[in-house]
Image (cartoon, rainbow, N blue to C red; front, side, top):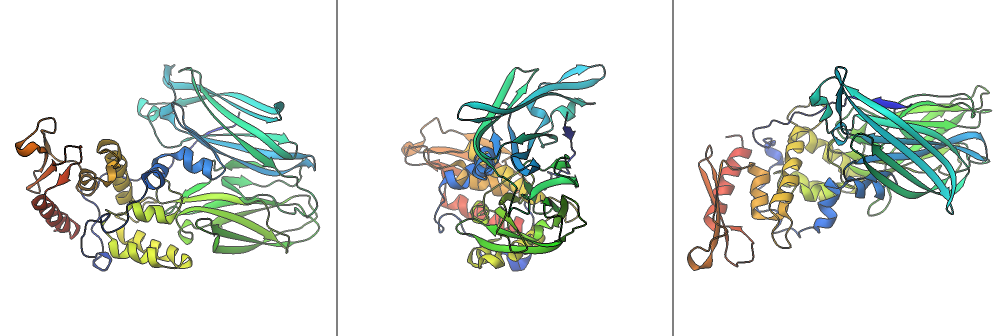
Length: 465
């Protein structure tokens, strides 16, 4: 059984208001979203909360539903050219499983089934039952991906269909993800394996041995984290090789944004390995592809990775992040990133990150965690007709000021001249905001006076007064 539980550092969730920005990063306050073309919510909101869409788009595994999981499939050389080693890694959360109290601990049981087919014919299968044990009930409700599962299979090269099913044995529910995969053959000019994102690794010396790896199933790392670890193997043991690793953006077109080189040793052994440490702060936010070149041999299989701005939220690229940050309050800094050349964006983003991070000692960004938590909640609560909730007036106010202290809702009753009203009170700020639906189609807009009062209070809060 290859079952791991990790304790990932979490960011505090308790800021009174969004962080006060450095004076040089603040521009004139305006209603962002009226002057800028509004994004298609399918493009800009769904990826933030739809892990399945993001990870499947990266060629990884992901499934949502009652029992969500994400995972990856990576390849190394097997014992012969016709047998390739496949590493399957999955990431899951405690709160998805049904726990029962047993002999002083809380216990959940789950089953993982991985199958590979070709033309409907079974090629390889792995199935395994596992047990999760925690000592306290709060641990059963953890939403971070603290459960890591991995297994190794040996596959013939070529195109295969793969499916992964995770079943909760206590709750009698299951979730499945399926896709096609191309299994490489490591022979001839293929002197280097695929790069494998890992949490820790110890290399092997022979193709017939199994590597001691703990894979990073999501192939992701938060921007503020210390390092991203990448494991690779070389199969030309008769000579030392210089390995060059490059990172590319993929949208709208490939642009090299980072590279590094290191020596892959010789020593006459069949397999040499390297462990590359990458600082996420050197990479831009979003989905990237890594490619390795050894001694002039063409790129090995490319590896998708995701640099996120938090360990809770994911987006596919920096442009999506910038659009979602329209209410964050650093318009000049955001505009500078939008206008910058691709190779300059990572440095500008690092500057914005530093200037708005309330606690640099932690790996996360607490202000962004709060902000995007509000974006998600606003999108659920305030949808109006065809307008996504986070782009409505109520969504804007909720994201920037938080929930009101009191709500007066007469939207089900017609007021004077057929106008429907929702009124929010922020008692500590002595602020009353009126949202009215003058059209009768359920589109509530701030009155002119309320918008003026709202902007006055928002400016004061952002200036730290």
